Image (cartoon, rainbow, N blue to C red; front, side, top):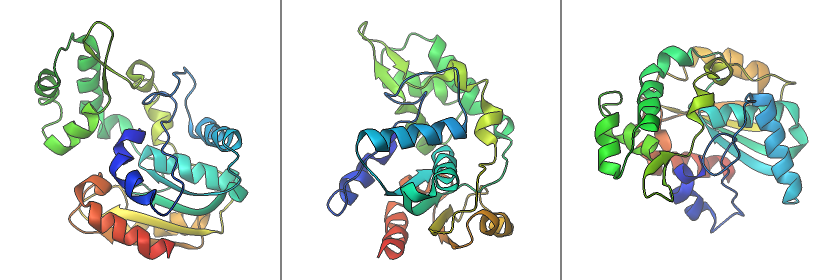
Length: 232
């Protein structure tokens, strides 16, 4: 969701034209029963065409990282450089990894919530980590009835976990690629470099210290510094 990048986007906008995008079924973007990385790569191409963007530096985190990889693998001329944050081009068992998060969000979706404090309290048994809860609770928005509801289409996403965990496909992308991994995260392993180089032969991997999966929120300075070294 674009809101997760607000602070970074504001900083980068002093040097670049920045577009922070809500993917389908997330944020303010449209809801759809159809959901996979090929479709979301097409969504990005359509967005770029609409805004007359021929080529861009593309950055994505986690699921967004797989969308970014799919874009580069299938539409390489649209990507000048690729940055992938804490995700590898491999299959993940999302149903197991995110089962508690999905259960918690489904419960939030069924409740009548009148404050973010109530939402945080309801989510806590499913997601004990405060930082992760804060990230997830950004999905909440006020309705006309002054209650809080999820922006993300959780009713569809809960049935698309296999697609979310899938490996991006396409022709190897030969441009410059930076994979950033949280040092305390298990999403990207050193042993993933063979799979990374098979699809992205010019890729490098950098470990962000003092950070887990939500590395850009947990260590924003370390994340930004690594990014600047790559972009310079």
